[in-house]
Length: 489
Ligand code: UDX
Image 1: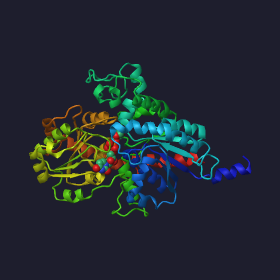
Image 2: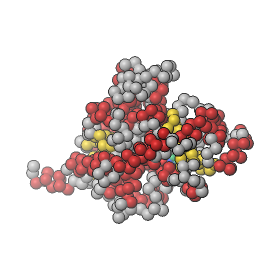
Image 3: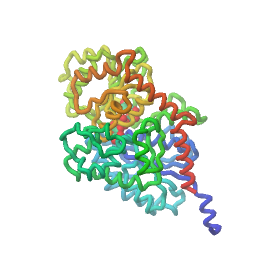
Image 4: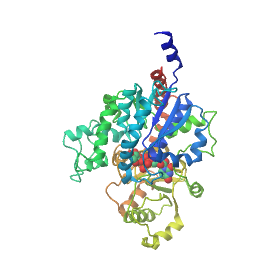
């Protein structure tokens, strides 16, 4: 090594580029990882596509928290989308298409010859893209940069329905449209007795292998094993059924979940922590915190929390069925009704008067809640959820049993694991009637010897241990930081 080489080597700073897919859940998660890396002294650039960046930055909480890190920077890449376009599940591929057509070539340019290339002032040393950006692995190879993928959907879905998708297709298990949904899937190691057709990722129900979502996931299944590592938002015990199998394909897995509690713990024990008032959330939308005072008025474990996350939608008919089920369970309820989450025109005159009256007595409805705080509130005794991965792991961390009504992508797998593997709730997938909802809500919340609540409590304790100083998730985070430093030298 000559003197110049030596100088270059010693002056290169570890610089991680985090590039999440532009949706509320993944961005929220990726920001938590970014903050943990900043706290470890690593330089971080957080790359958003433009349409998600505007609403995120207007959120003073995110801005004020991140402005305290001199080693953190936001950057954006155009996506050609109308700014602040409301996104629901049916707009998923539109956003992904825009990223593919507009953002991907610009991103490549930035990495290969532009502002983050090896010859730039502040070169990127390690890239952490969302695992679903398969193109990022190719760009990293071309740019000579190390890459560690971050998967924000559940590991149980990633294993059964992403990494095994090529195998499922080859075995003729996928696609299956809507036929024989109770048939067991026996080709995925580890879940042979658990997963039926109806429990695979929702895209497997297609009748067409050229479906763009299937193509996207097949690409991911091929690209992720080429990366130097894979970060998962889980903890070792929770996914012990599948992690040994995943490691055969992707040996270097970092399990750093529940990420939101690891993040919160690290921040509260750090001298530069934000005050309690600014909170820990990176929510893209404004949270209505008044529901926390409403919860304060209720006894422990008496309230059912209802939310279908940031992308799922329901019809008015489904809304009425779930509403009746919840009201008939006689439990007080806190319900998030995200604007745009009811398909078509929501007209209150179509809602039975008895539901509206009962809601005034025992309900609280908000547009968007501080969910992590809601689930941690002692009044919450159950969660009727769409089974998004963040919602699921947030509920696991707080020991809240769930009624699952999955909508799409990984949610079908998550709800199955909640019922059949973790035994902490009821999976209502593919059904929506008031009697079933009432029974399920009562089932997870009634009686002292409730098995769901007991399992939920056990998982919450294990989750808590995993983020303790010597717990598995803390150890994996430490290893990730060490590896980033080693990859940057
Ligand atoms: C989902 C899936 O989780 C993801 O895995 C899938 O591939 C795409 O769809 P989303 O609908 O965002 O994403 O659900 P979820 O993962 O549960 O994330 C929702 C996030 O929003 C959670 O972190 C939750 O705390 C937060 N949230 C939700 C709020 O802050 N307030 C609310 O009122 C509701």
